Length: 497
Image (cartoon, rainbow, N blue to C red; front, side):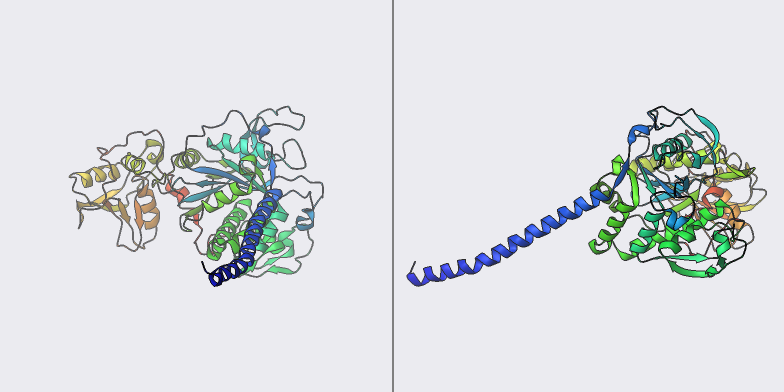
């Protein structure tokens, strides 16, 4: 190498040194920043002890999906009274609770609300002195959270109660208080909601002597912070003023919140402030007690379509001034979640073999024994190359009181899914929903002329009778019909009564 070339090499080396130093410094800063952020998120998270979780739990392998219990507490401790009013020492109850089932295919999810006044069996729960409470029958559901009267409540007891009620394993439990909820709504930039009528101060606080100022106007608006909290807490002044009606508005709110987060996108710019607020807002079980576990669970939800995100209330009826669970409808709902079947009976376990096996199962006697066609007229067509399916289906329908007007072959014989078509006449949709209970997994299509069934290859011949199966494959149509999708009209189904 010549003297000139050596000099050039030395100059290049001198120029590269600052570049390398800057590059290495940037790398160190980025790594340190990520570490700082991780430590910050971890430092935000509060967990509750697993010592109070029952040792006698449902089988963890019973379902491939995940069940997450979400508890909204009305505690006034830790500064929450500034938002909710009331006694600063009130430890509160589970004012809101729903069990979120994320199906194994990670493309469907359903949240099942449990009214706070529901009469349930509260199993033994751990008390502050280390002893366990006695089993309590016919006790309001929200009493589980206040068992032991501790400042942080008893989420483990609520989890035990939900497992006892449903027979499902609760994989994770999340508790959100007033402050946490309020902060989350601010971080996402507000949430769109709808009110069916104007709301006044005494609707939020019925102990007021006068009506007070108007705090919400009828229609669509964006709320955050205190106003978002007021919206989900309002019970009076809408519908019959019941907690059931409030649950419907809370389901609409959560639907709108999910839509806002998905519309904003799962980008670091959007997710990091949300993650920071979320980790400050929640108390979780030890299984979700680190930032990576929480973020991993959140990211697993990103492919769940809004239309496939459903909200429903556990089948219920009034029992005096309390709420009772309706059977066998509730058991049919829990069974469908355990089997990873959607509310309309479709397989969502993520496995082709499981889907094929489930679709060939006959309707269970428990799920269909009370179906009454009450003379409704229906035409039946065979949409497959398997002979006799239309006749078999017709016999099944007449056995349940339907009047079969026509049987024959459909225009094409390549139908894999049974399709039920109904028109716009009064009551036809309800008749179609009743009919669907005899064909689990069937697709309902409106806009036709009259009621008709095109039998697909998913229908197994029954000889006109039902054969019992181990568990229902679909929830009763009356229960499924009450479900709200996250993409439903904001202003629909906002009250009960």
